[in-house]
Length: 466
Image 1 (cartoon, rainbow, N blue to C red):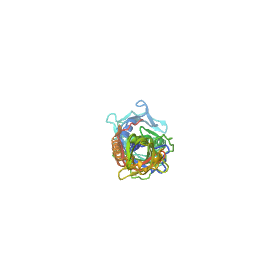
Image 2: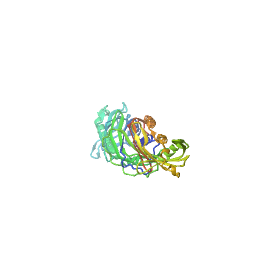
Image 3: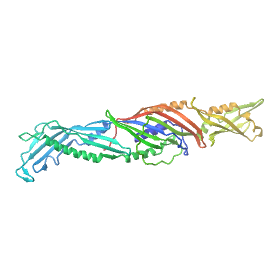
Image 4: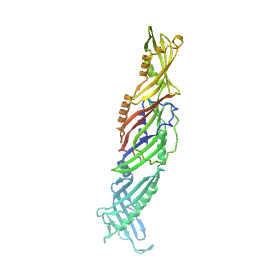
């Protein structure tokens, strides 16, 4: 889960660079984003972990000094070693097997109940004066993850398959069946111990930790604060094939980038949903351009710029001294221009910010203005701000998004298709990256965008602790 979480943070931040949202941004009407990422985990790491943590040698207690006395008439001691584990997963079933190599020493005596009638016979040996005896051993485990985060495991012991007979004592008594019966009893005890430990395993505490991480607010340098706002958690199609464990993790969320750091949300991890989604990611991101940033950009273009104006023989000029961008509750963008030159005063332009999807441009339309000056002769001098000035202003209040889309898509595709950390590699593509709407609010220029694509994660190495 932590791998998926940090990949999503980077995904959102690259797709929304240079966009920030005020702390009062609402997400109630924001469409829910769907992120479904298939993860392919190489089972080699899990097999290595099992190999390291399952003993290779088993002996009777205090071997070779002490005997195990199963009843009055029989005693034995043994040495058992195993081959490397043979593990194979298919679907939700895992088969674990190995070959056992054993030596056994035993002796008998005559008894009636607990009454002894003879001394122990000389020790009878199997697997000492000839190669160790061999037996194939195996378990089958079937896994099921329930919506309430319980991992249910059902373990079945397969019948031991002896490959060699075990003949003891000088008369060559075949005790293979007796050895197998004893081995099955030991294997059944192991099966019960595994079921007691892993038969029903509650993953909720671990998923709650991951859910808490997802709910955290994360700082993205140069951009703002990222909040995922997760709603639904899905974990579907858990199965294994060709030595890879395949898990499809899905999250429904309403991500937002905030200019001011919001308080982190807390919630209980929801039960797993089994709703089917088409896969890939379909992200709706709410962000914004701050008016102070827009003012700085506009000042860079217009401050100290001179405009010559005329009405017949009346020739004058104005010089832009300062600009300021803001918004109002009617959805209008307000642009204030302070000017000097032949006259001094302030003009307020108003217009509707609109996203033109055909040319991929944010532009201000329906522009009008209100002139304010101490010079009474200019109160009605609409000609002072002729089409030339308005055209110039429109040019600098239009934002072409083509380069942004191309750069963002290139950067995002580059990040998706690389090794994020040792043993963890992403593979994906951005299918579409577009701005869907723009609206002027009193606090900021609200922008919503949408990004769709595919992403999968391959895990070939895991740092697994004991």
